[in-house]
Length: 260
Image 1 (cartoon, rainbow, N blue to C red):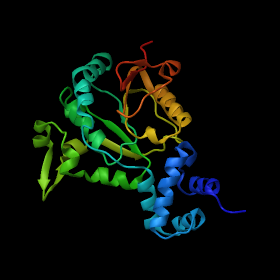
Image 2 (image 1 turned 90 degrees about the horizontal axis):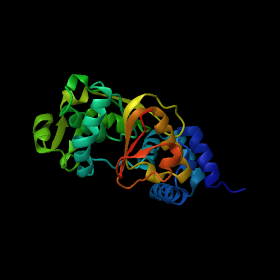
Image 3 (image 1 turned 90 degrees about the vertical axis):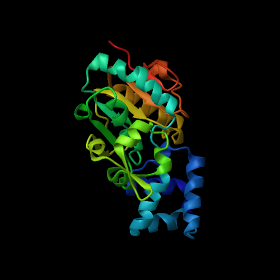
């Protein structure tokens, strides 16, 4: 029997702990075929054999499939709403020691943006962000904190001047911002979720998941929020069954676990 995509998904789960069944099949399959064709492999079986033995190919696969597209203050209008409404509301409910999770944080643009946004309301030494991603490579980039000019284009000018240093055309984020973020590996599909978050941010990653996987993740986020906590999702996403899960919809991209 020919080795097919189903076998590839099984072997990838064993090798990487990535469950490709949770991703939209046609879209993900097309991406993987494009990737192995670039390296002149003839099919899924040859490719997965190479992934087992070639570290650079393995790292390329992990980076490619996780679709790391990120930037600071992505969709600035939503961050303005966060500044004007969401953060003040969270502080009024929970105080200044907020428990915040940046899920699928990619190269760190989002959790560092959160630190800067919160710094307008809370002293830096009280800000702590838990930031996770499935991809070790992007977490290392996040810890380095070095970004292209394009990535920081939407950062408010005062924060840009205060927290970034031009180092030969790239921009280094300050240690005082970096020190407020703790990075860790986490798989949204397979791993357990911590509890009692006041604020969870997960944006523009679940669009690649199947509907069933998305709803499962949104339900787990709900359980991870404290009553009164808020989830911030991406501009390309929506929670179609938010009422069934239990959320209140604050706005197009902010969802709240009701106070009990």
